[in-house]
Image (cartoon, rainbow, N blue to C red; front, top):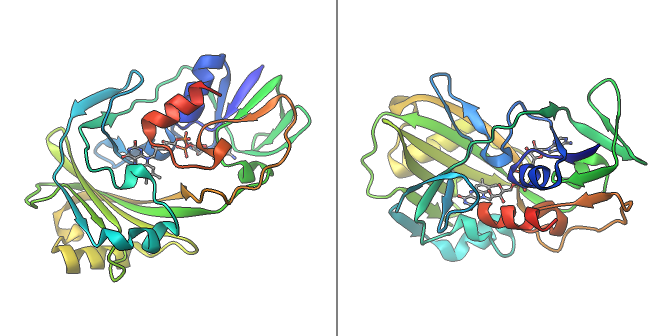
Length: 273
Ligand SMILES: Cc1cc2nc3c(=O)[nH]c(=O)nc-3n(C[C@H](O)[C@H](O)[C@H](O)COP(=O)(O)OP(=O)(O)OC[C@H]3O[C@@H](n4cnc5c(N)ncnc54)[C@H](O)[C@@H]3O)c2cc1C
């Protein structure tokens, strides 16, 4: 049996191509963009903003009003090098609404790979013929690289009256870096992203910054909100230490070359794996 570790868009693409079974640790498939339960409804964990459509995912026309602020400091503020294209995309045309429904996948965390066995959080190990890894290799006991994490507040809000939909801020006096407003049926979603290296910031501090600088009181305008951490948000290119893997184990997607492809590019990379 062939398996794919990681149920993000890369892992799902590889699994479809190779007829392999996905092993995913979280309760939902989709990785960064997996649905998050807001009580009244499920919303994308991160929206996919794109200048093109790809795969067989649903996309709606969406041309957001984008405001950049002190973007010359962006790399210094969060990436420490070149920032991913998806972060500063200025010609957004589509909002992709991915659905990640699959018939069968295994919910487990892979902890270690020894020979042709994957040791997981389940009581027994899984024997594989081929193993595709579309998850951070260091989580599996393989070598890894540096990364920047993202703390994200997802708020379901009643109305939206700002003159922008996306604001990208390189201002180092603000904790947050990106705010994204997207329509969602009869509702509006607001994503507030803070990128960090070491310790996750408290969501109270992020909220108070948003209130102070953007005059947006999340406690007042939100119907509901969630706080989530995306540990491997931005991978620092060049920091990955390669190790020799067995012939039947292969890294796929962004974790293979330790770069930061967008959603559509991730699908392309995974198709080539
Ligand atoms: C905050 C943010 C916003 C983005 N916004 C956009 C955008 O607007 N437009 C765009 O084009 N691109 C965007 N991207 C980039 C793009 O979506 C990603 O490159 C792509 O989704 C990566 O998918 P992936 O499957 O490679 O990785 P991931 O989505 O990270 O999937 C990895 C999966 O592996 C699982 N996993 C990890 N460890 C284990 C383990 N030990 N055992 C089992 N499972 C494990 C994780 O739970 C996860 O589901 C964004 C990225 C980030 C971080």
